[in-house]
Length: 309
Length: 309
Image (cartoon, rainbow over all chains, first blue to last red; front, side, top):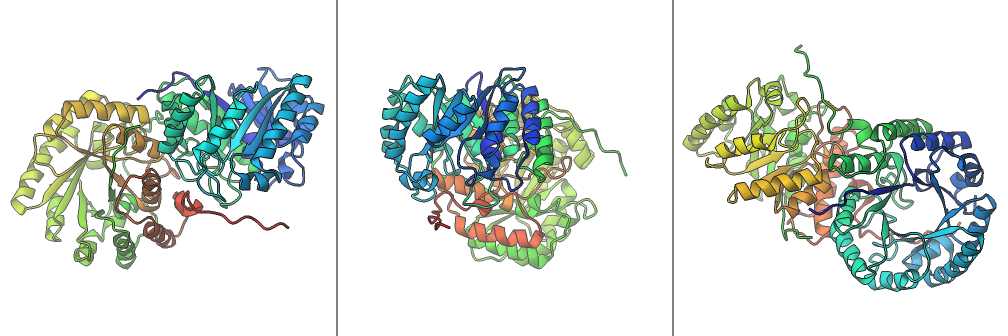
């Protein structure tokens, strides 16, 4: 089983993790989570998004948050999600240096999210990119619904090729392939990544999985076997699917790191500190999270022999 | 990614799934679950165990249960777990035709479970086997803590070799390798199965995974890549670890079947009927279960476009 020696984790709890939470976290609460993540040596954090505050109220304080955390001891890379050029401009005003433009591979999902066809979002991307170059901002792209659309069903790989053919010629920091509503299976992940790597041999991909149907870590294994070494993950497995109430969110950072470390794959993160961060998060959101390792402890935790009754 | 075309599922909810449940299920309730499993076309069911009723009260009605379900429309294979010769004799009295003798690869775990060393359980196995032959009973064996012991930690592969060298010469129906407390990781699973298959090329193994640390389906994928085509699974993901309260149980039958079918791997089971069974189970045990697909629905479920507010 061919696996990488080292994997990079991009922490998304402050954005994807929190955006569907009913309780709006204050700046101080978000800062508390951020500080714990820094203690765990997380190097890349998607900290918020610049979208209309009425649409995602949880993200309304993203601008204030970045002002609060941009100076931090580990010089953590801070990324904001944007859905359009307006978001890019608002983020720049707050001094954000790294943006992630998200659009969907399927038209129906993109229209639901940003009231545009995929083609129109791709046109807007070119405007955003030239704006970012002008402003000295690093731009990344996330392709939502890469592995399936909750409205349309299957997303044909030819459509992903068509999108990537336009993206790979641009000067983008990272391209993320996102399984937005947890529809992917391991065979599909392995096959698609293998084909994409053959078609676009110079492009590295970051993968974004949700654990909606329990296959998150299995999909991650399949992606690693196909050569991927960079993944989004959310502390506590927070996040979710707006269409499936109660469904589990993103793949859980501490479960991911626990699995990787147990297989001898490096991440540079501290599992112990992540577990402290995850416990803090649980207290702040006020409910249990889907984290496994927070409940069960790591695999090498030894139990003492019960005393006879 | 090399995967099998077909996989066999051995349903263990009535035994491993229920044994730690606080609420003792009545005969009628267990029969209800059994009937739904039969509707889902489950072919092999571990329905109970013959252990001291004071130790596992939930299993005390196993003898009555088998009398109630032995005549069933699909001629389902009914297996009872036994920890010793006495259990074998009690099961035979109730007419059970298939027994599964469980012991642990690690001495400390075996001593906790059956107050014997692994070596002494292996001696007892020989007695049980000759008794079963005499009585025309099929005997299988499960090796608990194959991938790690919650008391001792690592279980060396040489110990698994030592056990298997004694087992493979015997006329056993199935040998199950069990990750009893969910300590295994995919790399470890792939490596151990590959080595065992080289060392014992004529032996087929059944695998038993718990999802304690979220790696259950990833471990199953690794086992399939190493050639395994037979797995234990528990409806609703019920089951647990006596040492980690709240930790998740066995890999969940409907999540397993959903993953397999989504990859085009046959099981002969009906996912729709399994989901009905899982809903019934949830009502009978009186709490939410760790099933993902019961919550989120299958990957190909399409959502209608939300109407504008």
